[in-house]
Image (cartoon, rainbow, N blue to C red):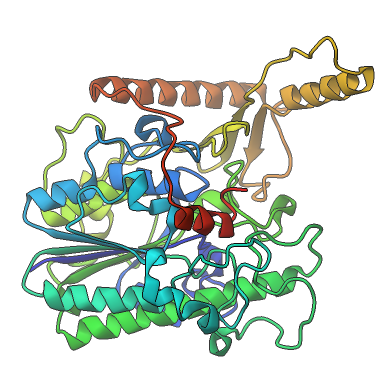
Length: 474
């Protein structure tokens, strides 16, 4: 029987995993999977925040197509999802979710045989504050919110593996250890300073303003990776104990990266800089498939997960008009001549209605970011003169910053905007982005789907508290 586990670690940067060359040994268990599987060196997200990225994973479409763009959007019923297809061909589908942004109220339970919203667990509410060793929520006034740990995911995963041992099984795990707040259990806090007494104590959903203790914050982040890595090792041990490991394909990835000081940022969301959209991708195949590479440098995207898993399951999805991803199984299973890659990596983010809408196209050498602002140049006539001057200056700055062009080879941190120096490259990348946007529009039309934006969801107070604690709502 086929077993497929897709494991997403929220906010995980690849360059902080030791199997990607990080100097700290943050990921010994993931490293073992990497040694038996394949490491993708150039994997990218299609958004810079969770709910939008999750929708891309489950539908193999860009945000413009699946419509999960802002905090008010939910996963439309019109697009076919990965678990729905797997169910139809005989798979039991399970999701074990620790993240409020993937709650069933947003439509992410569709197609799953069993759906576990762990943050709703009354049992976990009784123990998780103490387990973290922190007074969780003291900065966010969310005392009733629960932060499930990766070991809680293991508990459910183990029961599902036993329950469906003789079935084709797909398990989708979403952990939040590596998402703020960064307060791993004490025995895993090995990379932060134990004698530290400053403001960066790991309990914040957002780092304190004007953060100066960058290394402490990074140490907390690395410790969370180490903690989650340990749980992945325990999950692998359980698979081996049940004699399922050899028949299981395991994919480890993330929904997006995380700022750790670049551009002065310590979070995600916002412009699709590489430190936010670059993600890890480690694949350990079942014995049904033989790997023919240890590392792959080809560019892949999160939208490629869907067709890769259906490829593993033996499903033909070529007739589904909305699918935008491409299976990367040929890259690791000795069928490179069958692989047709992407012309560029595309990402877009418009998390809040009053925030900019970012779209980007990335090639090996160049990154182009287009920024559209949600307001016009008009200023109320009654506005004070000082306010009018301020708004005019602001609008001028916004117009000047609406297009960004970076040479990634010479400027990997994306600090120098070259749009005026290379207008020909700017025009080419602009055209590429326009072509991509038109393709997205065609996909929506083909699906006969009217994407519904800005839908008010009746979130319960528990879910609101959870998202507030993670910094997604005020």
